[in-house]
Length: 272
Image 1: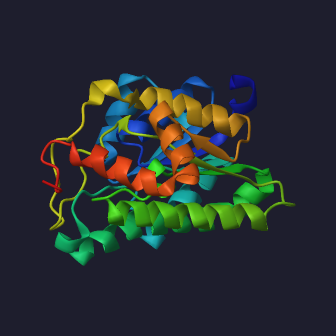
Image 2: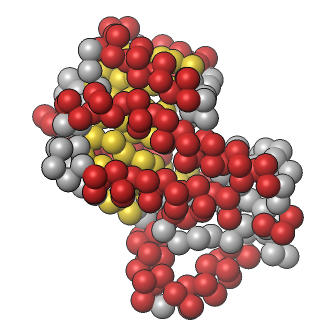
């Protein structure tokens, strides 16, 4: 993997925590030059400092991916420092947990702005450089982007939209050399659930799931970078995730019941 990724310039959004932070560490360890983007630049500075990264090999940019101007500026600053873009990982994202009947519609709008439009904006302004380098664009989606999850209507909708966009982009670029990958982790020990939005848009706080039973962010990051190195088109992670996708194809009606029952067992489930 290192042979294929060394000296590549990679942009990672949502790089201040969770999978994004793990991707940053793994990318640097693979010999890449990294451009990290997130709203909380202080956390990215801490990450760079504690790992003693050489300043010439990284760029930190405060970015809200729901802002088109911020996304364009990220690409401009990356090219200004490194002269090219080889890989874009659209990782920034937020989640939610509430029944649609109880949900403030502004929550869905916010998820679409970050999860879908953030991917569109970043990809749009990185695309000329990615085409020039015959590089890679990846969307960090979710099993919820393949199989809609109850109490995650907005999250599932945003990830379905992301995947449809990237699938169409891949097909448009069959003859240009652009690589497009959709990565679908299962439940991951990541900060995204702790910052998930509740029905009124307030932050959920503690995750309702046991982090110790999930795939680590570091494992997910390694799989994603390996998938990019091998130019895979789709990456479905965790045995539970793979089983859910399989059952949804074969017995979708039964999968409805299984998914409902599984989600209903969560602590403080909205189904109770």
